Image (cartoon, rainbow, N blue to C red; front, top):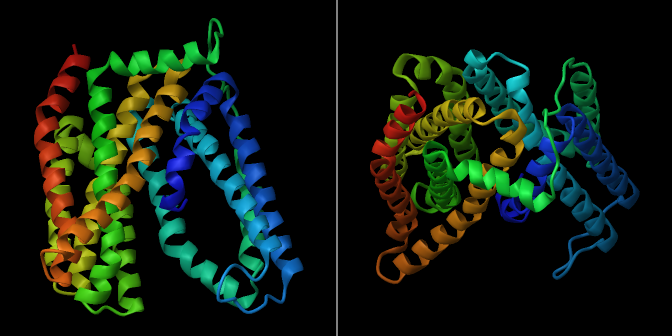
Length: 375
């Protein structure tokens, strides 16, 4: 989902958590995937009906009807994704044993990165080049295949609850549980701030690569691919690292290591070094995700998991657009005092310093939190 749309969709996190804890999570996933399949099919048919497209005008859009259709499809896909992803992450503990959660989460994220960040963009561009509606139509088909896979899952995926109260009271239960577990609060805020710093450099790296390093579009694409490869490696190795170091030290060191990665991107002299820093940054982030998400899946009761998980998504997604805004402000302020090239890398320095500060602040809290739940 585009980062610019994360903030409005973050507002759906709380109702998504409420619904997730009230209904069969498998059926919720099926419903949301069916909705997304229909939205992509609608987009494909709208594009087909609008062909051939007119030349882009100097102002406005050449086909207002098509623009509205694509906007509606994007809104449906984004909204359904909020409900679907929350339900999927909540349902996972019912599918695998507790001791295998890290491995399962890592495999899911690696598959998602492989398809979304490596295969998907290149394949999408190729299909659009062949015929504009084709990529949207095949997306609809892919969701249809996903429906068949999820429909074949056997088991009970509805949380056992003794009673149902009003929606305000039920959301309040999620807040109350989160407030009562210091470790979960620490992990939630840390994830939110890391996402903020991450978005500061993701938006900044475009201008840095183009204006400071002079990278071509192909070289920049390979740099982004390096980040995806690092994320895949972190997802696949997260379980082993967590097992070797323990969850406390794994999260402490991954968080501390992300700061130098941000700063290293500002100092990178070329595409290869920038790509390596990007890969290292994503590696640390996904190892953190594997361990932290698995930890909270174990700690939160099944009947509350959807609601508490939604609070994480609200914080994580809500902080991402703030990172974009902060990156722009830092560059704008820097350009009034420094040469443009220097100002463009200021977000990397701010993100690196901020990440190190956060790591120092939560280092002891993470250790105390795990010590508290072990007794």
